[in-house]
Structures are given as C-alpha cells and as structure tokens.
Length: 265
Image (tube, rainbow, N blue to C red; front, side):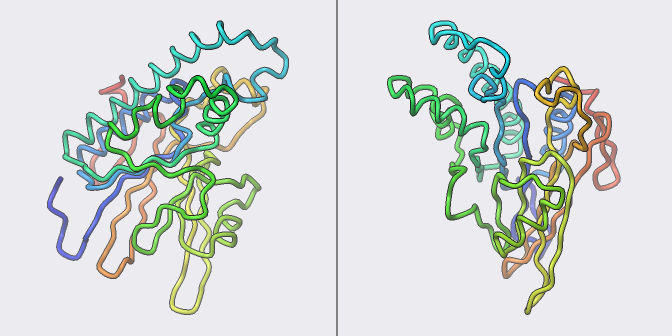
C-alpha cells in the first residue's frame, strides 16, 4: 500500500457491475492498471460480479429450460470463469498489498443464491462458496440488507432503482451520501442539508456493452458507460469521490494515460 498524503486517511477503488464472463476485457485491464497505480488500501466490489443469466427469468423466456443435469455443467463453467477473472483483479490487489476488501451481493448473485435455496443440496454454488469470498479476504454484504457498507460519511450499496433519475431516487431513499451500481450509467445528484451537502453517484459498469452480450435488450439502445471510482477519506469521515470514465478501453488518471489494450486479459 502506498503512503497516503498527509490528511488522507483512506483510499478505495470501487468497481461496479462486471458481469463475468460477459465483461469488457479492456475495461477490466484499465481497472487493474489503476489499482497498481493508485495503490488503494481498500477495494469495494459493488456486485453483479457474475452474470448468472442461467438463473434469470428473461434468459429462458423464449427457450426451453434444460434439466438440472444439463444446467449444472453450464453453471460449473460459469463459476470457473468468474473465479478466473476475479483472480486477475485480486492479483493486482495483492501486488499493492490492499487488505481491506468488500463484496456486495448484486441482484444477479441473488439469482444464483435463490437457485441454491430451491436446491439446498447444492450449497457449493451459493455465492460466498462458489466465489471463495472468505478465502479471498472479502467481507460480504447481502443485497437485501438494512445496513449499507458505511465508511466515514459515505455509504455503498449495489443499487435497486432504475428510473431515469435514479441518483435522486437513491439519495431520497437513503438520506445519506451513497455510491451504487446496478444501473450501468453515470449519474450524480446532490442535495443541500443542514450541515452540508449529500450526493449519490452511479459510475457505469465494466460489462461488454455489445448487443451480442446483451440479448435481453433485444437491440434497444442503452446509455451505459464504462467506469469506476476512486474515493479518498479525510479525518472526520469526509470524503472526495472521483468517477473515472473508460472510453474505448482507455482513460487518463492523474495526468497519465491508462490503455487497456496493452494488458488485455
């Protein structure tokens, strides 16, 4: 972990929806390079880390769902892929000795866990087991939780609302500053309260945004963006959020170009 400037007490990199194995390889490479450049002491995964589309209602809408003996080998393949890609990010975290790691269950992980609930004899596929969350050193927060992950004066959740003005909705619902995923686009909404301002941020996604990887959109246009966030905390719990946009596998950070094409995994 890099020594932080005087007055900065904590630094995190926050990543939204990756949807492994339907991720954008260049965007993930940018994140890994950013981790090694920024050297955070904290990493926060906002969930929907795996796609788990086998357990979504829309995936089988016009298809015949196969029997369990066919479904399980398909699931095994996806579990292996998600773990492999989490290993890539974890390798960068290990390199900079980032020890504080958090995993927030997304609604896609909830699909997988609901499948296990219906098939309790398959506990190895529960998210925390399938992705070796504890062994990786992550603290786990459930999607449906009355308590968000709170660091200083900033909350972190997966996100639940997808209206046009979802940042406003998340801020009004929670009443505190929050970073969330789920929506795949960029938004910020700020409100003034007694004692200061509070804000809500969404920072896009890290998913492959092609129509081939998103059949459920049925060719409809979307306003998704690739991105992640860097958060610095100061004494007293105050913080600064920097949303970093990734465009065509590239971004600039602190005056330096980060090119995802160079380390594409």
